[in-house]
Image (cartoon, rainbow, N blue to C red; front, side):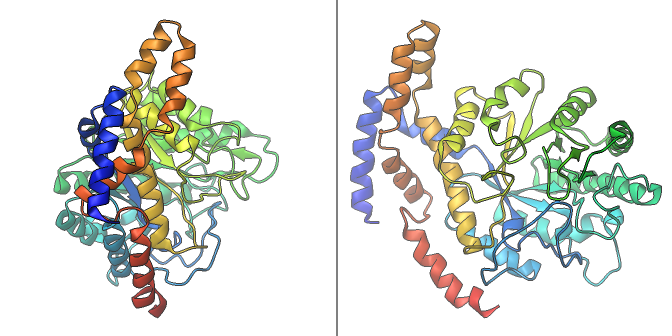
Length: 420
């Protein structure tokens, strides 16, 4: 897009927003500082590099678009390229299955920082932080759909040790990169059909989690750990051990945080409605932002009403330092790098748009009982020239404006992805 056109559009936008009581430069600065954690698993269909050749545990990736990353080096190269199209503070979210074992025979219950040091060195070189996730799926030690709540003590012990190792690795991430490493714990444990003894699995899950989080030398400040709930999964339709009530209750009573995932609730529920509710009783939360269509389908996030409402909740309430924002989707039906670019850019657009809103004027009208003005302000905001500010924001970060990024992705696909 022509730079002069962008600059003219920005000057016009500044006037329009200024008349609405918004300091555009301050809004851009505020949005720029809010980190968004980009998920590594979009680039290789959640396969990972520690030996799992297929997915289980309710995980399913659909599509067979060419060019999937086959090695960690390919994945890092793809991420490097995707980041050239993404402005603002960025982290990378790793799953434990992305360990690089370098020919060693070592399993998830014995992973150390050594299996992730290359990721740390890469992150340090790129000036970004790392978040982390234990991988409780796609492994022979899964007891069907069960891990931490398995009745098989040997298998349960394996997964407890995996959870412990991940906290230790997260602490090393935090130490070496100089910023917190948020760790999200999600387990697919549950039953496909009616479960009779619902208590015993949760008893075992609680005991397992208690052991994982027993080491208090690893603090929530350095390694903020969070427990993620889910309504149901593939093959786990009738009973989920770590349900919403269980996960929120455990987090509240055990000094860890809670993860809200956009696809993990009933289709009529939205996580934007839950953020301020949970933060009444918890210092911080973690978000997995996805787009579910009728179920937890993990579509690439669109710039839709719910995404905007999520970012509004964070910004309007001043929750920037209390919410860890991570993306979580895996689409193999379209170009995987485009998935990153579209999703991350949409997340940042929504954050910028939230910062550009005159939420104080809306709050004032609401507090005064002037719901007419509140509604009018909310609606008028939708037609303000946020796109012109976005283009200027991208220009200042030397990333493509408008749809200019797509041509680069197509070229990368022709030059790199199609040759894999």
